[in-house]
Image (cartoon, rainbow, N blue to C red; front, top):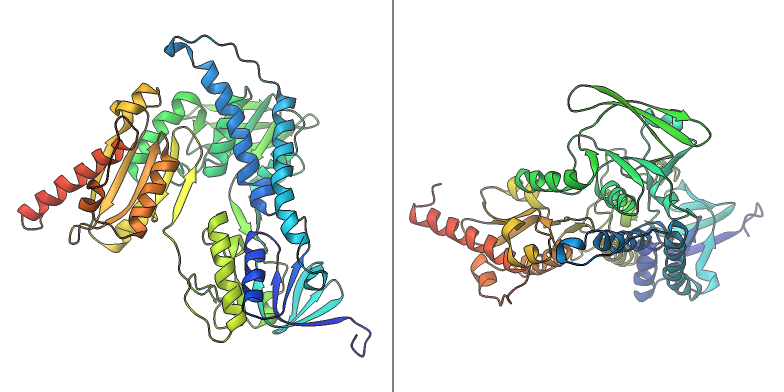
Length: 471
């Protein structure tokens, strides 16, 4: 207690947030021999386990089972499909709770003196207030995660709008859902709900198709999704209005210029997420409004504050959050001796069909660095893909024309999550196109599609070399 009767805790490192990044930061700081305090205001269990990647994949798994059974007749297999929405959501919640339980076990193993519950905010450069408890820390790691973003146009239905967090609390599947947003979350949940028998329409913005930017790959992805889903990737939505007790009416202009109105039992907003940093009173920590977070050290400007996971708005993925937490925790413990942490090759994957994947930042990152050569594969006639009747989509692989080194890729196609991992490993190992082509390719597998694209790249590189480097 201080002279005013307020409880005061003094530590080397204070970590705000007990999700994936926060737990990694706490463990890293402790490993450096420093005292650390883990501060958490909300529910434990990490975004991924509670409302993110794990429950969404449970919903997608159920949707895939229904879809494949429903479309078995081309193989000569006849099957009837009946989706029990309550049973689907029961399994989603049960398995979700199991995954959350594993995380909670790790939190429970943290000594009680290293754990504090409450909302943290800065009251000075080296001091936090946590619901009346003062925490003095030499350094601070912010790992407060993110929250769904809701644009102002949805204010009329804000009281009934569903975010992805809410989906996994459903007891049953709704009759219909309007999905706003065609990024990774919107496409994954929209397609899954459609395959489970829910009437779905996806309203996208600005042509966004998950993580894809390459125009060739995007065109193939759009064509595949439109065969199955009612989706407009650049929807002209005029208004959203409440209808009845829980429903919504959406007024929009279709591709032919006709104004339409459609009614839905629920509306799901998937317009991205924003870092949970606005209520931390950051300005009192001495951090200027123009300060940025260095992604190699996770240090915020020239301050003693480090930011990891979704809170830094860099790469909001679980494996990246774990890496960032470790880097931030180590640097917070070593401060002021901060060091550049090792970052892995970037991976972004949407678990849709066709699956979407971007390796090493894809087209934007490659085009920003200078000249490149691209090779491609159309999965329409790729052997194994055709055998499985999953022969939709395309992929483009990029290479440096001077060194022949593999630079990255964008994929819309079958088994893209696995193809992307192979390519990410090749990129991180700094392999050339020729070294990748020297690797084994079994027959018949989808990976042979990568070999087709690699051969295309190699031929273009050889052509450039023969022509003296000109196109």
